[in-house]
Length: 516
Image (cartoon, rainbow, N blue to C red; front, side, top):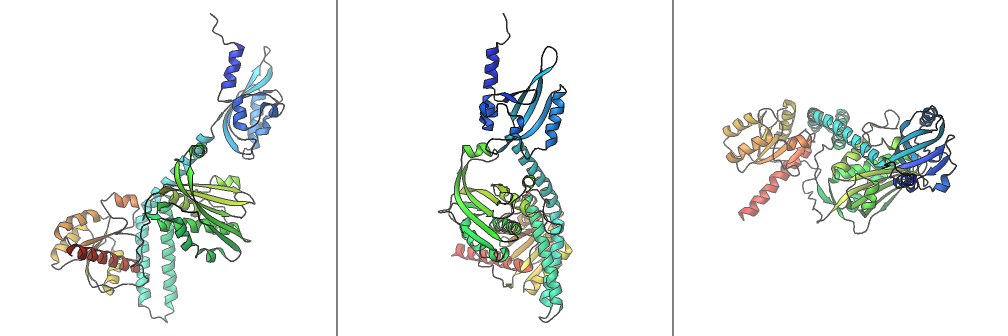
């Protein structure tokens, strides 16, 4: 029995193939395209008949590839390549293309047959994976150096604060010391950015109403943007809540606004809008990495110069910047990307040269009531106290600066350089210890283990943890209340004083309620 397929069967196979099939003559003029070609490109067979493959040429594809393509097939060889092409509507897509010369009995080329597979989604996923891998590797690096760097910044900022407090108001040195303190805080911000784009930053998650957050943030934006930039805020109706760190989301808004300002040196319009959206199957089909569901959209649009296509693909890479030397670190958008991802969201950028740029951020919508933000202790004042504190810190300079400050604030301070010494100090001291302030990661015995051991011996003693390590390292050292009983180094001494009062007074109130 003859098992060879008939011509009609071969035709049906080509017509029903999911791959694009194109047949051209030796000059490259198209003679046939199958339905898969029509469905993907938007061109009908009649529209492309007699045209060359140049009709699909994209600005994103270098011309050298087409030269290589023709040199290969005209010499009788098969061409294999990845090509970025353009649809009829202008959208680009990526194909894995094979072009084979068809030969007659005399081995002369009579036609070329091109088969192509759409790999746009695969390339998008690969690009996303590469971006995640870059972020993760740099995040690991940032997390590794954060501890030592943050401890150094703690020493610089703490002694600057102590020196500043000790200088008379008329001293000329106040300006110099203030500059040192400002520089140390900027360095601390840089560390936080490194941890944020690496998704290593400690988060204080709350139920947020983005409209309320934006209303407070918008008071700061006019000073940031300047008088020649008009601000539009378009809040969505009955906006859903998101679960995120308000400080980090505020930083996202400020970073995007700063970028928009730089893109509009001659003025323009910045529009910030929010809305409830549902990302359905159709959206997910075009954005493979997205999980369908309900989201809150935060869109930031400027009327600036726009971003060139070759920069868009790399815009979220750490340290990648198109700004002049000294004008940017390349961390702003990387920080935005890391924060959005850490919050479980997605971010996309849409831009055209001369027409401006829009960043769209989708954060998962959650149910629940808005958390009350207690700021009873967030006053600029530096509170005093009279309680006994156990300060446990393995870095001598950090420990001594904090001890000096707390003694000035009226506390009795017992100091220890590690967990084992803290146990001895606690057992030797006969009076009450109201609060232990301890580093999390220390040699011999870490803060969490220390707190667990002393909890049985001093059940009334409260604990405040601190660390310069990234969140993953902190959590790996035991059960620690990141939100309420933890301070991420570097912090100011005034912030430490406020946190101490917050922990002591909150627990005093709780004890009073329980005893009543």
